[in-house]
Image 1 (tube, rainbow, N blue to C red):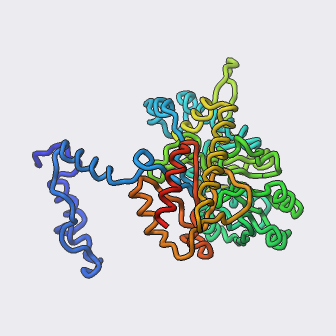
Image 2 (image 1 turned 180 degrees about the horizontal axis):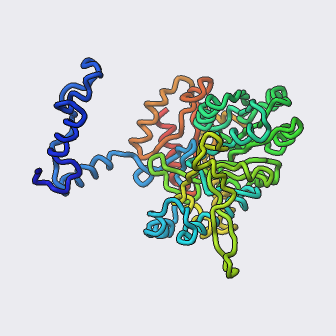
Image 3 (image 1 turned 45 degrees about the vertical axis):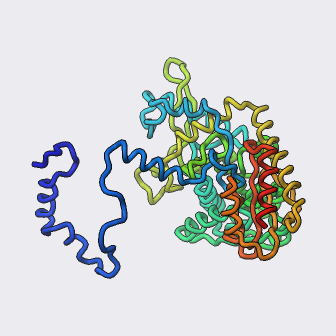
Length: 451
């Protein structure tokens, strides 16, 4: 026996397993992988470290990251540097929340179920929709699931998607569409918003849904009402992906005719965490509530008339007959949905308006400041929320520019040429309530000196 009795696999365990499999060494398990493509030698990592040395080593490694505490960020493109009130971590760090997973037994899951119910209620208030689910993995997944729902509800195969939708959301939608044999038609943009003439020409009686994002990937506000009227004229649906924070100022998509409203709840008190995880939201009109993917928590009363919460409108196929399911998602992001719920509850109606207004005003101040730099111009004239696109001087080496900004303590904007070849040399700038006038002015000064 090994002297380390409580290590999960001892040498004796290893020998017994190899003997059962019928090989002599672990190396034999990799026999079918050609030697020339296998890593030779040892990985370049340190020798084994004690706990104290390991903690110092990992802290040093983590310290090499540029993050929102060490740098002022002007990078958005889906993940934003918003203020996360300290009360959120106090609530989600309670063990009854962070260890909770699947509330199949409502009689012992009332706290978790109520928290999810509150999230759903807040999302319905924000979006102007009738029903919301318990959350999705992220905004991109929610967007793809919306396309799935629209195709099933209309019994049509064509989804028309604007190229102003986040590229990653469109990629996930394409992946879903391949498995479901759906046709994806992408519509271009004009002046930063969906090309209306091209959209009109594309929509037909074969269209299951028109799918847009507002504010879109370029930060511009789309004409949701116009898109809804066009989709409905052909008996299709309108899917809108929306930044929930922007709905503190913008009219709720549901009141403008949207049938499905989705998005990412990361702006609502969820830390960026170097890219995730986040939490998607998904809301529908009453006509589509029985097709909604994932979980829905409902409010009811027990035999004594006491208020209680249960999972409701759940098709058993979601769990045991997956081939007949309306969706392959039957889980949710309950802990991060709780973060969003706490954020919305402590902000209140006026707080949501105020934060959204700060994002709007500060981004417009930055827009005016940056476009005053010689050689820098505004790419699109469409109205924006908290992101906008600037064109850098011709010949600018954007990668070198980003490094200069990092050295000066700034995380620069997103280089749009990565996803839109026609927009090489254009930068998507995000400005949230966390950015001060001094930071914006200094960012502009550094940017100008680096061009």
